Amino acid sequence: MKDEPMDKEDILKKLSEIHKLDYDYADGRILGSMCTQAHPFAKEVYCKFLDTNLGDPGLFKGTKYLEDEVVRSIGNLLSLDEAYGNIVTGGTEANIMAVRAARNHARKYKGIVDGEIIIPSSAHFSFKKAADMLNLKIVEVDLDENYKMDVESVKESVSDKTVAIVAIEISKIAHENNIYFHVDAAFGGFSIPFLRDAGYDLPVFDFSLEGVCSITVDPHKMGLAPIPAGGIIFRKKEYLQVMAVDSPYLTVKTQSTIVGTRIGAASAATYAIINYFGKKGYSQLAQELMDNTYYLKDGLQEIGYEIVCEPELNLLAFNHPNIKPRDFAEKLGKLGWNVSVAKCPIEAIRVVLMNHIKKRHIKELLEDLKEIY
Ligand SMILES: *Cc1c(COP(=O)(O)O)cnc(C)c1O
Image (cartoon, rainbow, N blue to C red; front, side, top):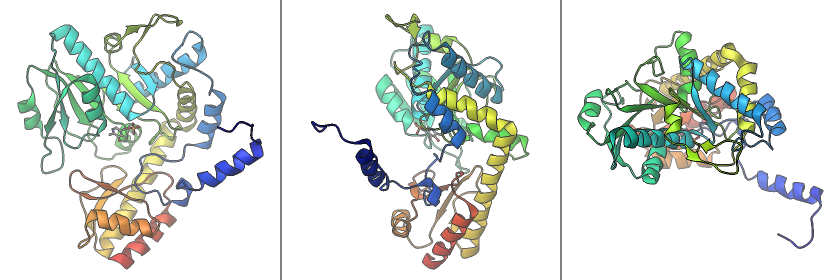
């Protein structure tokens, strides 16, 4: 910080120069991200609620109402009439809350002290953070030949220390009675329900399955809400209650979230965008992105690239016949394409066909890939 104040103009000039170092979604070169440009209307609403603090909901009753409404709407989408939960910073925080609820619940009602969580080997790394922070042991379950969580292995991994079983949105569901069951649908939560309604063959992962206790869904991915917006939806209020700590000085007596002062703008922006889009809007978006996914897949196969598995969502993993995935990613990077390398189920280039990637970008990508092949 300098001694003397700077002019706004000078600061803005400097900021825009620095901002140029960032990739811009609009260029269609960000191919590996599950995030995308938020919808302009959601951004507009977000700015109006920047000063709201859901850590002290008695002061922000309106914004708290919006958070509850968003949780209720997402719950409804996932076949739950009465939902509990919060809009948090993202899938990571949502998953940590779910694991914390499971651990505390098992501690209170089953007396489990050295708990374990069962996760598929393809689970997001946020569960490693959760286990580390909550002092739980991770029991990893292998995937079957279709790259799905192996149901038998889950059953074999259950012990008297299991506090939770975690599944990802597109897995076969392996629920064991009386064990907390969490589904991580951070990515697919805002597309699978719509694709299913449109006739796509995708598994049911939601609260219509009796054993499901909580689901993570991120509005800041397929929901087109601004970052940070993650959702954690619980079936019962008691899962929030087992995490409650006393919160003196505040307008409410207890708090169950991880963070204290917390964003209200995300709830307001998500409220705006889900109402603006409606089911029809999201259904159309999800289907367009699936069309783009098949378009890229067909193009890749025409050239001769090898697809790792048939895409179920707007994600595509593929490999070059002779170049190792990391070298291949570097090569693409030099051509301006920002791709990521997925490790699971096998090492491969992973493209996430988000809304900022248009057909013309895919065409350009395919031209470059043809050159490299
Ligand atoms: C993105 C994602 C996460 C992590 O969410 P963040 O918003 O990055 O914290 C967790 N699980 C799954 C399945 C995801 O797709």
